Image (cartoon, rainbow, N blue to C red; front, top):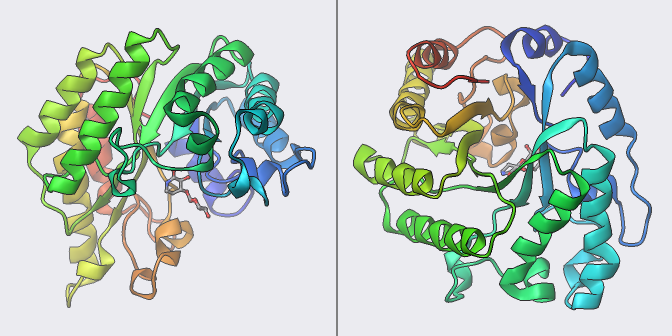
Length: 316
Ligand code: XIL
């Protein structure tokens, strides 16, 4: 994300915050369980960000995807102490002065796993039960006492019932963490938006108010729009306008919240979007602020005008 090429000036001019989309994940740092972490790529990102005057978000300390080989079999407290606790401590500690906020736990909620607590059944859950979340935040706070610590999750914006269940899961988990005095500062909404879903500003607005009620900072952490499976015969221009409109609907509600501290898009140019690799029909997806040739799309203008008319102090 901070290499050369046509993206470099865009990252400089368009962003005040950078996020490594891949390099800080456990499986990117540690190839197989028991190997030492390789910090070459992350050290380089940290150095480049410092040189260019950018703040860095850390993503992510605990996630069930992209684990080191063998980690899917971890299942006991002893495994946690031996492998997970040192991972969290060493990454957060190494970058304690470089990373201003961390997604400590990513995607903890999964109602489809059928737990009464609506939490995802991951190796982390197998090791400590629901307490893995609070343990992870405590370890991160010890290692990086100045960092702002976030729970991060997705699919909590639309009116469909399955998203309502996910909102309930998030709220219950946050309530437990806060009641237990866990050092958590924020909730990150990934905002992988999707033009096929049904948005109701009252439903999302109520959720944002409930989050505000916890006294947490909110952030939009991975904004992009899936539109291709729904594209039909629309022209590319029309598809880009629809993607921008999707962003407007959701962000207008989020930016209205005094708790919202920032907006991060998941990449800048469609040419490099992870969405393009998700399925064959997505190879032409138009879901980011810059197109394949690094020219601004209507989403870029939409974001600029939303930021210009918002109370948020640090849109990124
Ligand atoms: C994606 C990255 O963009 C890809 O490069 C990688 O191969 C897989 O992960 N939610 C998240 C992100 O929290 O970490 C994911 O990022 C996208 C979905």
